[in-house]
Every structure is written in structure tokens, then in C-alpha cells.
Image 1 (cartoon, rainbow, N blue to C red):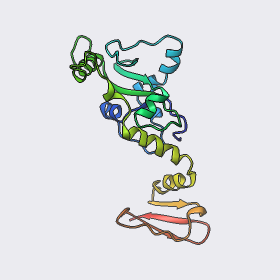
Image 2: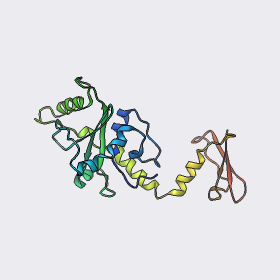
Image 3: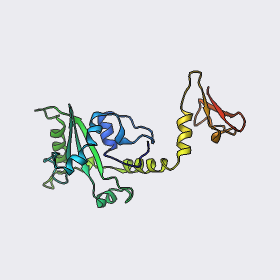
Image 4: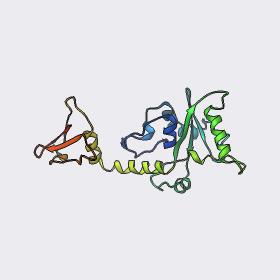
Length: 208
């Protein structure tokens, strides 16, 4: 799948906090198989219907709660001005973001929402209000969005790498004729692969 439709995207900071690995570019971040990320996809519609709770302790901007089982998250919607001022492109719009996530621990300072409130209070010390900028998308998030958008316009390249990384039982992968022609990969970049042509119609790629 491509990044064509952004959904509610987890930030890199959120992914790190949830202990999730960064997927390949053909996987939408909003499609990652995690209960909190799945729940976050429901927030925009719930907000439109007036059925989502706001994080009151963060009053420098609107943050909404995403809650499922033991997981708790913070979702925000950027304006067009926000997106540009944070370093994002004016198009495509990437308005909805899951800025952070963690565990519910009722009555404990390490409870996700309690911890967020304390951190925002420290960040805003001296200003008289909390600051939540740390949970907004950063440079990496916009770069990932841009790369994902470009990858969906290069299906041949994406399909090549998808096929190239497939491993059959005997360690040999057949590639379509579009990629045939005696391609040799630089061993310094991909030391375990060696490609060679088998005529005009297909190539084979063997793991060393």
C-alpha cells in the first residue's frame, strides 16, 4: 500500500515510544498492526460526531484522547498553517497525527496522560502554560511522508525491490522480464546478492 492517503499517522517519536520498528515505504504508518494506531483511525470521525474526549491538561493546542484496553494516545489535527509552519508541504494535506502513546496506570505518576501533563508543564515552565510541541510531527515525519508519496508514483521500482527481497526455499528468486538484462549489484551495498541475466525474458537472483 502507498502513502497516498495519510490517515492518522503516528509520529516517529510515537513509534519509538510504542517500541515499533519503522516499516518499509510501501506500508502506510496508519496501517501498522498496533491496537492504539488502529484506534486512532477512529478519532477523526468520533471528533466530528462530538464523541471524543479532549486532553484538558494540554491547553496550548487541541489534543484528543485515543483509548483502547491498556493503551492511551494523544491525537491532534493540524491546520494548513500548522503543517507549513512545522516544515511540512502544503500538499498533500497530512492533518491528523498520533503524537504519543503509552500505558494507562491509574493513580500512578507514570500513567500516560499524567506523564504528558507533567512533561508539558516542565516544557512550558516560565511561560504560564504547558507546551506540547515535542509531540508534533518533526522533520523525519515530513520526509517519510514525502518519500512515501514519491514511492507510490514509482511502482516498477517498488515492485522490483519487493520481488528482489523475496526468498524462495532454495534461495532463488525469479524476476519479471522488465528487470532482466544481466544486472549486477555492487557488492559493497548488497554483499549477499548476485544477479545475472538469463536471456530477454527473465533474470534470476541467488543468495550467496
